[in-house]
Image (cartoon, rainbow, N blue to C red; front, top):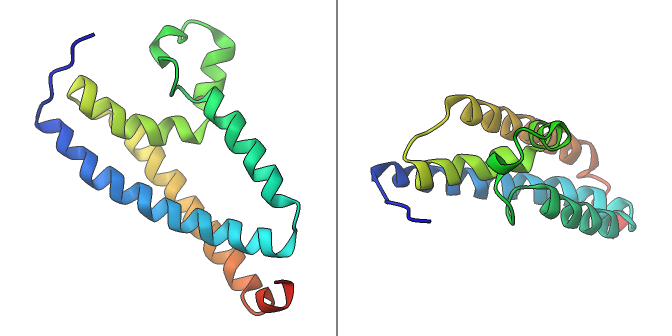
Length: 129
């Protein structure tokens, strides 16, 4: 497969910044949960491993769009949207607006959830560790 890199590949810079912000929010959320509940660490590791296999990292999403089960996995998988906002501009040279909006909504929901969880638990984290 041949890919021609265009100026749309510059979308990768703000997407990587969004990934860094999401990484901060995930660590804030997981830090509070893992400090309180010690078993959550193993649960998160298992969920990440399953998410790796159901997210089109090792396979192409367009190969399975006709399969209804794979389509459901793609629609409800937040990792798919986060990966697509980086992959689509680099490989196809365009940006899908719907995928971008869904990714920003996922990031906003993650930010709100992280701030609420951290605000509720920040006073007790020292006692849980």
